[in-house]
Image 1: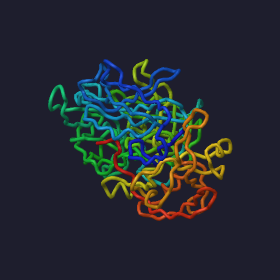
Image 2: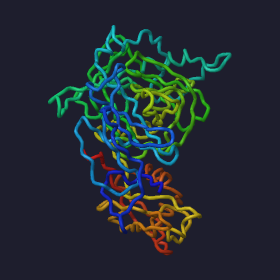
Image 3: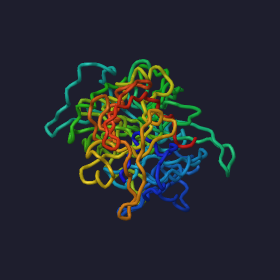
Image 4: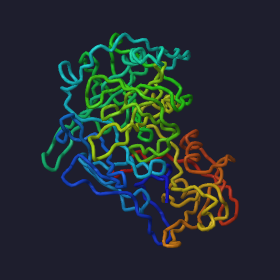
Length: 482
């Protein structure tokens, strides 16, 4: 079953019906003897791993490290919430459907702050004079052509003064060492003159202290203003010297095209500010899980090399505009964690659309139905005991969630021809009169609404058409058993 956790988080309590047998998932066990890795899937192409910010004691020569943990099955029965200490994180970046059993690597590197200081690995050298305009400026600059295409030296000069290093320090208790201090680093983008810096949520998650490090080694204390685990974004604020940074110009991620040239700028493996180039490889990727288990929609795929440490950095178009925040890569356990040409960025329009929520501070909330569903198709709808060949079959309902309170009915799990399939249950065919074919379409509509809004679901139940009003709840902050 290609179940999508866009609405039902993987670790939420569920109310399945039937015998409870689920399909075998792709979860694996942690690699023995490798505490900084977590094997989460095995396939013909080898074992794929998820890397997140890890304890400094696990850091290798380049500073990368990872949390260990078992994400469990992507489609199997609920096995209870996973609980973990700071040394053992549940990997929540399972990528299904579009990329099969591949897993995402959150591109963050752990390492000592000293590496980010002058004389260490983090000194950037000349960033060049900046020509970026203020965030939100309406007149986009022209592309920078040369005889061979885009002049990326000028693109870099426009964006480099806005990209900074973000160093996170957190205290934790290790079962072996007692109280320890962990340090990791990623990248960030200055977006305005008020010192707001956007980065990834997973870069700053659990931080006791955050420091912005500039190219000349200047360190500025930062505070976490807002976080959006559902989109893996965070907004920091710091008193940044105006003569050393310039805000980036934010582009329009809705207008990017496959094949368009781009540049990624950040601090891979804690190295000095680094630029890599490539193209937009794909758009509308709806399979990347955020740290809290929700799927990030409309993700941008690029082949510009992105590595651990690039998280939170800028993906820039040929005009020097930021069109995405670099977030994750696909990587293989058989080689060192790093780019294999498949990287992902959160579209910048998500931040722009929700800027009022970010500036209000706290945790950005997103509407939630509290169901798990799969698309209905003409080939299997009869086998699944359904009266319609389109829509979303409700296969799971979160007890006490909005859908449960509205009375939605989940499918029963039955064995058909040796396979467990969902049979019966409600089929959502439209929301507020707008037809929906699959879960991403439904979530796309819900993302235009706010928590507390009322929507009306058109539901087919055993051949009867029903209008079911639902008051949208807030997607839980974190469903990983913190």
